[in-house]
Image 1 (spheres, rainbow, N blue to C red):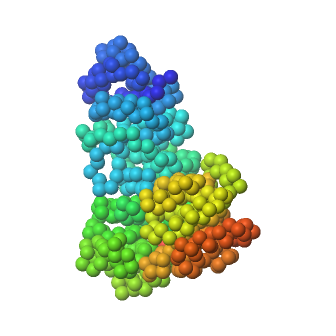
Image 2: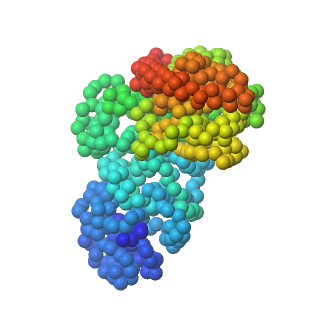
Image 3: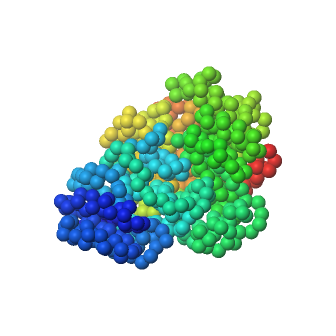
Amino acid sequence: MNDLAIIIALTGRIEDSINEIGTVIESFSDVDGIQLVFAYDDKKWESIPIMQLLEMKVDDAKKIITSKHETLAGLYNNVLKEIEAEFVSFWQIDTDNISDRIKIYCDYSKTDELENINFIQREINKTVIPSDMNRYGLLQTGIYYSVDDFIIRRSYLLKNSFNETKLLRNDFFREWVLRNSRIENFSCIGHLGAPRKKYNKKTAKIASKDLIERYIIRCGANNGNIEQINENFVNDLKDYEAEEVAKYLDCKNQNKPGTKYKIMILGGYWEYHHNQIVFMNYFERVAGKRFATFNVKLDSECLPTDLIGYDLVIFTRTRSENAIKLVEYCNKHEITSLYMLDDNWFSIANDFPEYGDIFTEGKPEYDNFIEIVKKCDGVWYFNDFIKQDLEKYASRFIQSRISVDNSLFVSERKQIDKKGKYIIGYSGSLRYDDTAFKALAKVAKENDNVIVALVGNMSEKQLEYFKGVEIITVPFSSYSIYAKRISEIKPDLLVAPLDSSRTSQSKCYNKYVESGVIGAACIFSNVKPYTDVVKDNYNGFLLDQNTEEAWFNKINEIIADSDLLDRVKNNAYEDVMKNHTVDAVLPIVLHNIEVVINEWK
């Protein structure tokens, strides 16, 4: 069995590809261990002399003639069934850097195991490139990858195939990478320079770019039946869009006349998790219920004309100069605009000057932020401290509640064997105060019944504290992957340290809902926002002093009383499931969105 098959689809006119075919075949004349496959649905390609000599020129070559397919995605899916290699890569006829690509694959596979999804990172003209920390969010906003830069495990692709709908004729791979980045990490196996040119020979688009992007985002959020996804999407479209799109998706048009919204969500490179938790969880939950379709763009790259036809534009934590132009466009064309802020950018420069220096008057990002807030129709917020600080700039406010999508927190693999021990740890973004981590490490070193779980971002210095300790680490990843991993670990106790500054007390209580949903108890600093939802020794533990001794004693006290720990775990789980899931908060959020759209303009 071959390790890798390079599949090249031959489409279009022979005269446009004949030279490139010869170049590719010559490049593979001395290659071992890689199969070269040409796939086509027209026997005319067999008339080319170089194709007739293929097996003589290349040691391991194959020609596959398929049935007619309306899309390239359909041809690729069909060809997979004829391949035996463990991995496949789909090249264009004019894919560049052939010898370098082959070398990268051969060098990497000699020393490292390939994952389900592997790619070669190209130099791209982007400020931020996708990583495990932000890949799903960035891929919602644009094109970052080309199909021929990927090497995919064939068995994985057979289960997670390309979407063959005509609507994605030119964009099927963008949809595929988005959908799979939500559920699978990508492995970078090498680097190449900037692409020589755009290789895809694109056919004419049959729908607007905006509509295709909304469909891609809808598919990216789903693993379900494609027929049901398509019908739900059509149900949620504006009346004037539905009939034509149903034809492209080969599905029934069950769309009923009525108000369906188009919502644009704008934000920066790192705002995906905020958008997901604050808005997209709810919009995705009512897919097919004739509420809305939505798009996501970077506020620094979005064009004013991208907002045409939208009912609501959400500015999530935006602070770019371009966002000012966008909100001005909204005001000029009577499109409702909403600013969302869930961190206190007014107090951070005073509380944490080393991190919040950009949020001072006279600094471009801060001044842009203030200008956008002033021009927006109102503000979506969670914490009263933030409202108090915003009141001099905004006149309308909608207060919302944080929730958790419990459907994501289900382990796909067998839960970790705790071996009769407690799993205690931390989950979240980087914290700059090490006090709780030092105490946790000390507890683990002095108790042989403790395993430490560290999920998310930790500094090298913080990780050093846990040397010699039995430890489980999970790096920062997409939200859905994080949810699955922490569900597999199923910790007993987590720590959620937070200082008493105004900035910290302006945060949301995500730590409470995300620990409760997996049945974990948590020790919280005795400050807002945790005191808004946690009752000490009932659905959590509150700690007054932020000292290493206090954290150490509290953790030891809890693990010494298993009955108390179990009661708190159960109470937290029941409270979160009753009051803090997406379904529990959904009616409030949808009502607020409708108020904003229908009453604020």
